[in-house]
Image (cartoon, rainbow, N blue to C red; front, top):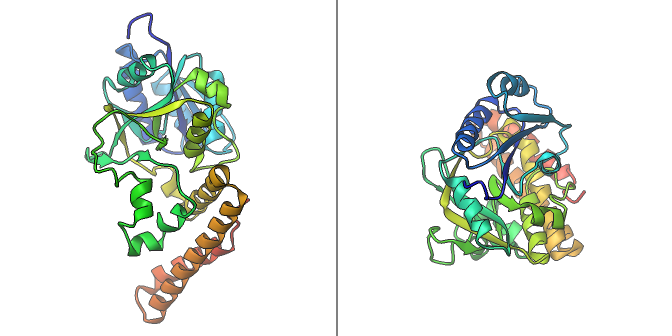
Length: 314
């Protein structure tokens, strides 16, 4: 980018994904060499897989900050405090930034002063599209999205609306959206400062929804920029603990509902999600009774029982 362009800092929040982090950092180093960004910071949430040592050995020009594992938003905020950039690129460690993507995102911010946050097209490693545009959830969305009801009714109107599948438009035009999946986005420093960054009461999941919701309340627009592309492996860190990840996913959704719709809707959402776990528990129990893959059913029964007993509205 020209010397007069805003300075871009990249912040990667990482936890126990050394191999994927290496690929992410290689793509960022290439972007820095091309002049697309000026600073790379890894905020490591106390990984135990020698990620920090790998960075020191292979990427001596990259800054590292090790923090306690207090969640994604808290780690990202630590990176924002350290970063010097006018624009802040926030990335999951299981991403690879394609050439030119950062320039496209930065141009979208530079040419639109009222936009606070922009996000790229996300693609799976096989290059198929990974939908990342979202509307804010209605009071009933969490019951019909990522639950057994979506399994039974995969094209229900709540899920279609939430994932913007009801527009009939492909993801190929720059457009204003409610919020974007947070695996990769570029935010204006002024917008982050005005909103205070991520709400650290979210541990994992839902924090980017809440951030975009707060940005919009402060008058900033959020836009999807399809010409920028980032490869996203998806769920690399969270797959290490699927039960814990599911619990954090639903806690994040309940907390997001509280922020968007209030405590009454959040409490109702928590009750409905426990009902979902109960139905799943009953289904797994019936499959165990008829002798279908009993070891698997026993594990799942234990998982759904723990989920039913867990608090979702802490």
